[in-house]
Length: 230
Image 1 (cartoon, rainbow, N blue to C red):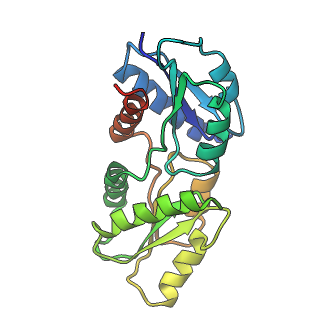
Image 2 (cartoon, rainbow, N blue to C red):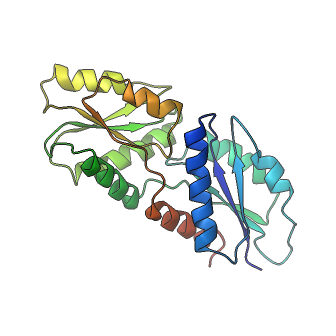
């Protein structure tokens, strides 16, 4: 039997966001019909990660499960919530976050082109935001990946928690006379409260969130297989 894949997302009250995460998890199930794929969340609603972990049958023969964070950067939820949930289970492996990964930037670029953003416009890469410096470092690395592929200026903004906020980043781009129109490129997994903040940032254009997308499934499967040395 292959290890259980626990797909662990943040959680959202937004119905569209919930449906989007469910669609990603169903796509993972379709891609791996021989693997038991279970969903879990670290905040807002259940099923709670700890409960899902406790339901996995212990194994003395190898890895019983791999927890794959459906999160774009490392941070508190990866290094505390997920780590704590599995700390007493040597047979359950926590995988890294989905990013930074160049395939996420592939999706960002697709969303930018879908929105019709001018190729020299300033782009604000808009992440959720975290006070954890490891999460900020992951977002900064993602921004560098985007700069390598975008002809205009690239800034970073955050939907919550820390500065610069997305609205501040938009205002600063205009203040310094950077290329307009100013676009916000969502670096969020699914629709929800944070995506609405991006839409209220004052930008001329705002792209959609990353999911659903086949490359997300590709990354999730890779994190899973790496998690038990397949």
